[in-house]
Length: 100
Image (cartoon, rainbow, N blue to C red; front, side, top):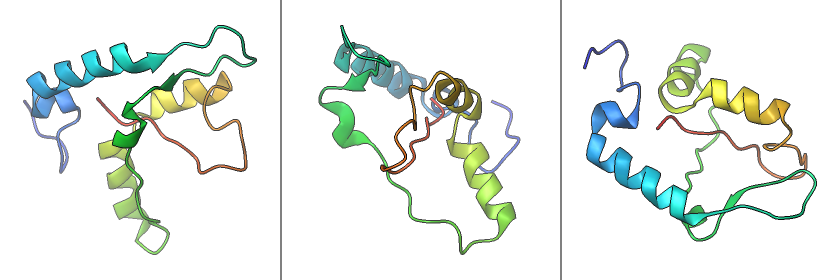
């Protein structure tokens, strides 16, 4: 594993066994809607395992970029937003997919 940043790039780089177990748990727990527009997949019980970060507005921009690069999967986030399956409701807190 080549270290380019402060944290590993993916969960699999840090612990492959945990990454595989987490993927299996998510695959088993996801609820696929049969009729909705847009189709919004959600977790049945694993939603309690989500993470909410405190506001980073008071921190320097460099720190925020390092945190985002280490934690967030920006490619997936943009794809989900463009498909209007993530953050389509303006009344709730924005969600971001984490790197796995």
